[in-house]
Amino acid sequence: MPAELKASSLYFSPISPSHKPTAGKDGYGKYMLTVPWSRTSGWGQPKIAARQDISLDPLAGVLQYAVTCFEGMKCYKDDQGELRLFRPAKNFDRLKRSAARVGLPDQWDNDELLDLLGKLLDLESDLVPAVDGENLYIRPTLLETSESFGIKDDAYASDALLYVVTSLNLGKGLYASSEGEGIRLDACSQFIRAWPGGHGSYKLGANYGTVQVAKRPGYAMSLWLHTVDGKEYLSEAGGMNVWVIKEAKDGFLEFTTMGLENGIVLPGITRESIIELLNDHASGKAEFPIAGMPKNIRVVERDIPMEEITEGVKDGSLKGMFGCGTGVVVVQIGNITSQGKEYKIPSNPLIKLLRDAMTGIQRGRIEHGDWSYVVPGWDGKQHEHDVDGQKVIA
Ligand SMILES: *Cc1c(COP(=O)(O)O)cnc(C)c1O
Image (spheres, rainbow, N blue to C red):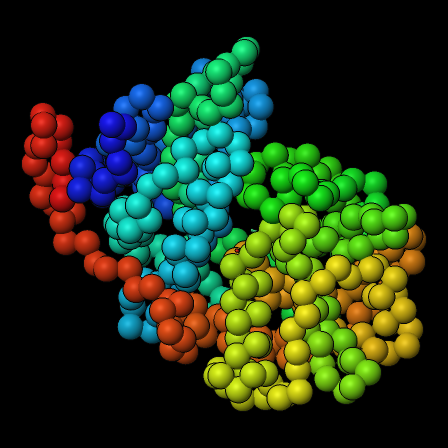
């Protein structure tokens, strides 16, 4: 039986207080969590030690065929100084889903991984800012370390590595630079990020490296499009899900975002959370956490033709656009360039309301069910002992 992922067999190697981070890496967490995996023996011993380079065989699957997937999470510090995560099990489930798509290990107990992540974060606590909109970004990564070369019986990796590193404030600069007017997007017809039956809905490294070349100076990111019967539709923007606010014929304000059925967009946890908040408010199940959200709203998940944006700008039915994701939380879209023409997207105060609700829940100022997870303090940092001849801190 291959071994399961077990937090209790953690090996912790403390770094000395005089440890200096590598030059240029001072905004990064000092530690990293690593857990090796092999097909025959399963999950190996988890280890928390100094953040360091990893070495790989030149034919490793990750290097040759981009056999890798990742997650993006954030750690917030609340006003009481406690560390918080936002719906972490959703990230772990999505990591499993991505892993399965590229033949990487996709089975572990989320609680064990959360326990290990909590210990890593506890060690970085001093680095986590206690300010709205600031946080420590967390990057869980899974990759194939074995060769994915030649003819194999099946497509599954024989060796893999799961690791977690952290860095300060991803997305903050983008948000700050756009406050007031919103970010500028460049609608991209040349490179297609995702298509039905493809892998756009998985957080695979391959989905990002292949389209980054589309980014043009002067724009925050590309607005991805896909084509159905010669007509262009919105997919998403950079690493964000995209929303359109429109006034419907019946006077309702429609918050529209692309549906998940055709597998083109990444199923964002921020997207899902916004859908829940708005739907609960519209149905009367739970008031929107901050006053000011109108009652006559509705959430629509469907394909959005690019034409609808350009026409909505002209006839005034477009009432705003925004992007959402862990990095930016919620950011207003101010401007879209499409086919050489520039469209000014109207601003909407409801976008800030959504952002404030999300950041409030994330930092624990607004209670919302079990969405915010408080990272338990780790008091076992100093106790080393041996389990089966291995040094263990538990
Ligand atoms: C990660 C990501 C998102 C946002 O997902 P969240 O879970 O909200 O962070 C959206 N689009 C793409 C392409 C992404 O990679």
